[in-house]
Image (tube, rainbow, N blue to C red; front, top):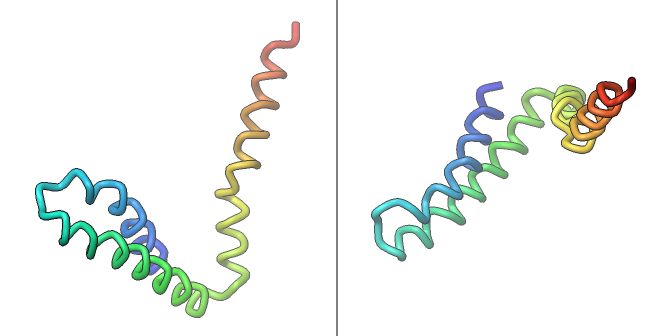
Length: 80
């Protein structure tokens, strides 16, 4: 699971890099490096954890499912 956590940290760091006080060249190197590293870690996690675990994690984090759940609870609250 730590591979997945580090993968997420790399993706979270990508939008932060442009606001750091470092040179443009360094930013241009860091951003693609973070993206590539995140993808390598993701595929390594799939190999280690297995496809079933990754499928289950994606199912829980599916944004469409979360939006549907929010809409259902809002419509149920609006009923008299």
